[in-house]
Image 1 (cartoon, rainbow, N blue to C red):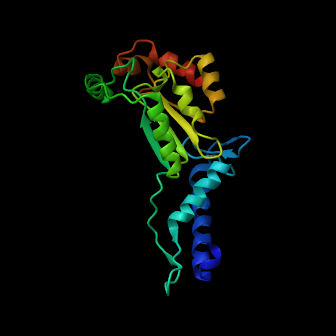
Image 2 (cartoon, one colour; image 1 turned 30 degrees about the vertical axis):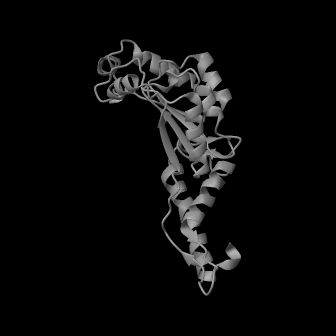
Amino acid sequence: MAGSLKQWQNSVIRNGIMRYRENLQNYYIQNKSVVETASGTAFSLLSPPLGSPAARRRVRRIMDDMTVATNGGNSSPTMKWVGRTPHFVTIAVTYRCQCDCAHCSAYIYRRQVEQAHSQLSTAEMKSVIQDALALGSTCIILTGGEPLLMKNIRELIEVVPRSEGIVTIFTNGECLSKPLVRELKDAGLFGVFVSLDYPDAERHDTNRKRPGLFEKAVSGIRLC
């Protein structure tokens, strides 16, 4: 494509990508802890590590969103700043949960799904993830309810090739036992967000109506 664009257009693209990387570094990396992985520098649980194939894939999609080349007839190559790639996709894989949080709407949806028998099968959810990847997504976020109550959660993680994207889970932390943490990592899970409503165990457990949840969540974080 570069050969069909004018010099100023190539400059705009190059400068835009440079600013994108600088913004990532300024926002995420400066004064913030990072983790060096085999794939690159991990600075966020929602973005592939810098330097990884998945991160390069995201940058290519950003460039594609920025640039539309038109070569037919007398038309000159044009640029449109109308990106449409869904870089992040959040999927509620289940509405089941051990908790009854004051702020959560999963209970309402759970009743609707149970009454309508509309829960997606594992195969259907895998297809949704594959469709999201085909659209250019580089971060698949699995949530719920409590996603770790889904027996086939490993299959959903394994659907995403590490060269194309990362998978992150939002969880209340209760199920994060040592064997499960190992299984999730082996499946390719990139990150885990554990919800803590309060730094005080009693307030947290009261808000979630689940005695002992705070300590289990903290233990799960340590295991991760």
